[in-house]
Image (cartoon, rainbow, N blue to C red; front, side, top):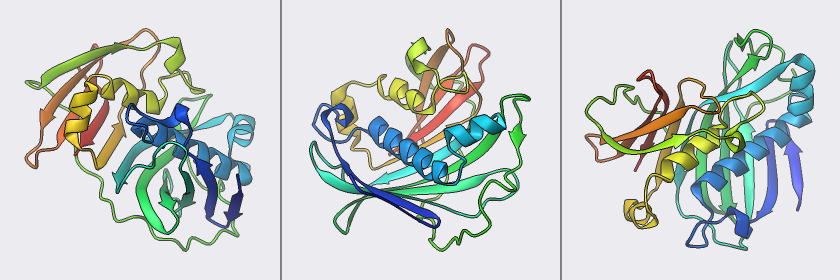
Length: 245
């Protein structure tokens, strides 16, 4: 496996292994999110803002939203190139983008918005000083727009419940962001997921959820026919929102 970091960009060769695949031997949607999250960590570590550097500061990264477009999914044992790059940070957040290629052919692209939180205060931390001054930001973001998904799911259809377990937890002490996606997709049968013919998925993280909590997944159809899904906490507020089309 070859890896390369150049300025704001990082890329590596990846083989699609069985543990990454769905029932059709394709890269699964949660595995695609896992892959990009791992790449973000490796790239950040190059600038001392990966796990070790952030632990030293008593900070941790959080994702607020991600939008991914699929051209086609690679299949088991395919060799692909995964790439991530960053955009200039503003005061409180930053953007990290991703892409997956087979040769020169794009397989999927992704935009994500991140922030940094303090373990001490539980509050967001200013981004100033986290990126090195020498970085040149010279790669545009994918042409993917973020949606406005309404948080009120009153009257929507209940499609399932999920009780958060120990295996769902992450370094921040709350539910790992990709496990929301696993729990959401687990509300549908394999036949239903195939019927959706998913090419776009957008997820937004609203509030943290913890071990032992039960999330209720509610679904409705948007005006354009997309599935809008909310993971609703016991108090009736949304912890997680998604749009699938």
